[in-house]
Image 1 (tube, rainbow, N blue to C red):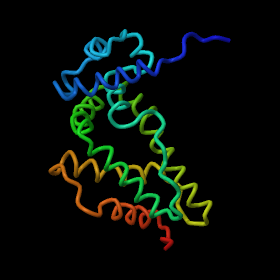
Image 2 (cartoon, rainbow, N blue to C red):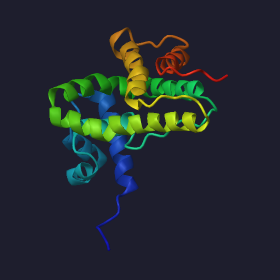
Image 3 (spheres, rainbow, N blue to C red):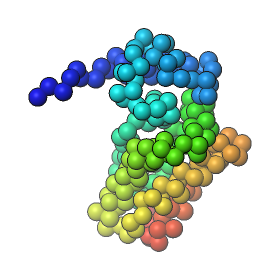
Image 4 (spheres, one colour):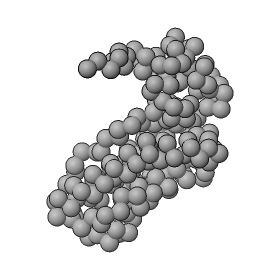
Length: 192
C-alpha cells in the first residue's frame, strides 16, 4: 500500500541549513516556519509534516532528532553515564544550542500543549535512552536501580544550569562527577 511520497532527505537538509542560517542571523525568537520555508525553498506543508511547531523543528535540527543514540557500552554503569553526560555537554554547548535553548525553554513554559508534545517526543526518548543504559548495567550484573527519569534529571539539570543559568561554562570533570553522583544516588556499587 502506497502512503504517498517518501520523505525527501533534500527537504530535511534544506530545512536544517535554513534553520542554522536564520538562527545565526536573527536568533530563535525571530525565526519562523515561514522564514525557514522561504530560505529552504520548500513548502510550509513539508515542514509541518515533519514538525508541529517551530520549537520542535529547531530542537530536532540543533540538538537531536527523535531517536537519540546511547553511547557505546563501556563496561560499567558509571562509565556509560559519564559518556552520556559528556555527550549532553557537547550537544548543549554547541553554538546553535546556546542560541535556541533559552527561548525554547520559555516557549515550553508558556505553552502547555507544546510542553506535552516535547515531553512525549523528546524527554521520553531521552529517558528511554537512559533506561537502555540502566538495562545494560543490570545485564552485566550491576545494581543499576530502575529510575531513568531521575537519572535523566540528575545529568541534564546541572549541565543546563551551568551552561544557561550560571555563567555559560561547564567545570572540568563535570561529566565524571555527575556519573559518580548518579551511581551513588541509585545506591549502586561502582564497578572498576
